[in-house]
Length: 357
Image (cartoon, rainbow, N blue to C red):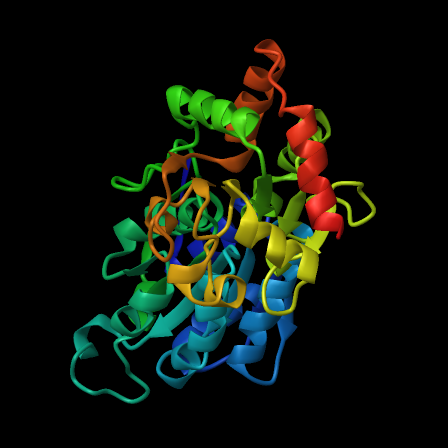
C-alpha cells in the first residue's frame, strides 16, 4: 500500500512501521519539518536531551536494555558532528543505532552553507553504512534499509542524512515489505564441515577453554542457552569479555571469571596455557589480549563470528567460522550430541586441577 506524504512524514511513518516508541533528539533548523510531524502525533515519544552526544548515548542504553534499535534525531552540521562519539561507541560495541540527521537543501550542498558539513564522509568510518538522500523517491527505501542494516548481522550504527528540502517534498511512501539492501548479505549459517571440525578439535583437546563475548548476548537468549548447554555437555571451563558477561552465569561451576586486564588470574592463566580455544562472538581487543603476539601462544584457535572482518584482524586463528553465534552453537551442540563426543575425562580433571592451583 502506498500513501502520499512529505519526506518528514515518511520519517515518522517509517519509525512507526518499525515499532519505534522512543526518539532521542535535539532540535535544529535543518530538522524542524520532522519536529513539526512529531508534534502532530502521539505514537512516538520524543525525549529531549541537552546535547546530541547525550542523545546518542541514551539511545545506546535504550538499545542495550531493550534489544530494540535506538533512534536519534539531530540537526545538520554541529548536530551531526556531536553524534560522532556515540556512533563510534555503538560501532565498537555492536549496538543497533539509527541516526537521522538534517542537512542543508540539496542545492546548497558543497557551498559551505550555514551549519553544513559532509556528514556522510565524517561518519563513514564509525558506521556500518550511511546515506545522503537527494531524492524523495529514495527516502522510504533508505529508511527501511537503515533499520535492516542496523539490526541484522553484527548490529551497529547507521546514519540517514536528509536535506531540508527533501523533508518538505511530497512523494509516495511504501511500507517495509521485502526490505533488502542490494549489497548487504550477512551470513547467518556457519559452514557445517568447519563446525564439525571445531567439535572434533574441542573433544580431542587436553586443555580446552571457551572464550565468549558480546556476540553471544547480541544473538539472543537462545544463543546464551545453547552456550550453557555446550558447557554442561563438555565440562570445558569458560571465560568472557566484559561485553559477554551474563551469557553464562557467574555462579556456574565452569565459570573462570572475566578475562583481560580487569579479569581474574584464573581466566588469564587458563587462556594463556590452553591448547584449544573456542572464541565465540569476540573481537580480540587489546584490553583482553595484551600483546597480540603473546596471546595464548600455543593454542589452536577457533573463532566464531558473524562479522568476517573481525576474524584474523588482531589475532590469527586456525579455524574461522563465519555465522550467527546462535545458529553455529545450535549446530555445534547437535553434532556434539549426535556424535557422542566428550573431552577425555582424565585430561579434563588434570586441566581443572591446574586451573584451581
